[in-house]
Length: 166
Figure 1 (tube, rainbow, N blue to C red):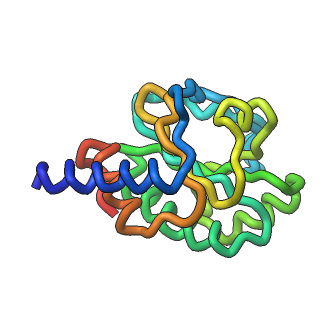
Figure 2 (cartoon, rainbow, N blue to C red):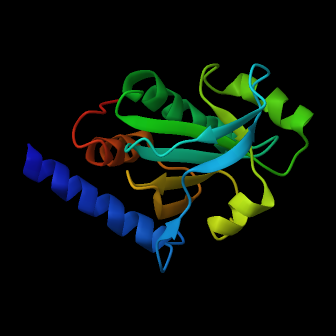
């Protein structure tokens, strides 16, 4: 079972490296402070609590973002104690980004991207873009486009050392 997980992880790494922009040098991006899009919070620091973090950059009127959000919602629901998940909105004002949140899990943390954050991750070209940070807060992968649920599940399983199963 563990050997199978390692092989799945290696496949994911190859897919990510072929189809995405991989940071040539690891970028320390967590913790970062972003403005929360949830009404109960003003500005929130997404802390590096030793867990891997998967964040999805979304924008208004992005059908692929909504599709990717469904897979991310499963991770949020089943893996809160083993993997951080978050949404990061861009290319819209706060009202537009908040309106889009109805398409995602209602309790998932959601933030508005700022220039500093986008600079730290090396920018992005399209939405959805999935960012994967290791437990130390280093950006280890940036994948543009939709990641199938089974591939995301395998990545989460490895990132969480077997604790996250969706």
